[in-house]
Length: 214
Image (tube, rainbow, N blue to C red; front, side, top):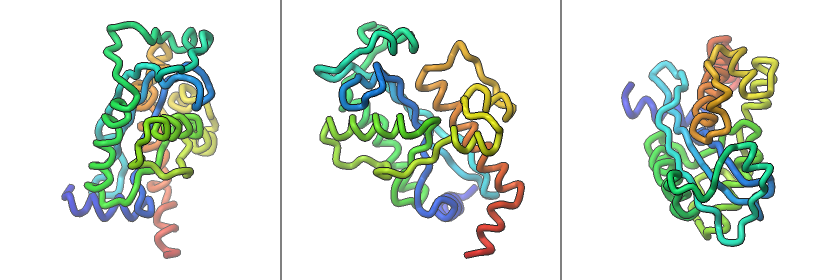
């Protein structure tokens, strides 16, 4: 795959937007009041035949922002101890910069103008990313402000399942429930699922039909 071919194909396939898979683990459901605890991102690339694949994973454990709410039920569900020193957590501002910086580079390398967030129940992840960026006064949020690709919806169509573990099972993607609810693991599995759905659509001729209408 040549770099120029990758630029042309990726930018053309998603109308100038680079899909980037995101998963967050949090201390509740309210993005404005509840702590962001983990964030992970998987950038995607495209081969010379137009097939999508996971490229690189980036992640950070996050120190709860000052005054953040920590719902005990959420912590029990994820198994995260926010104050465990072994997490090597960093500030929310630094965590976002560590994630956003390589995404900006990937956008440029792919010849795209912006990233579009891919997530499983994407609105949840998108809201937390946007709220955290606003809270930290980060002006260069690389993601589209409201559009997303939701693999729960896409998997419901392609696999007949909306739960990530069940959709992966139907898709033939290994899934370990003991590893779930880790931002890195869930992001990587969501990336595999998204690529499978996009590539299957291509194999079925769906993308060729789109091109014929242009």
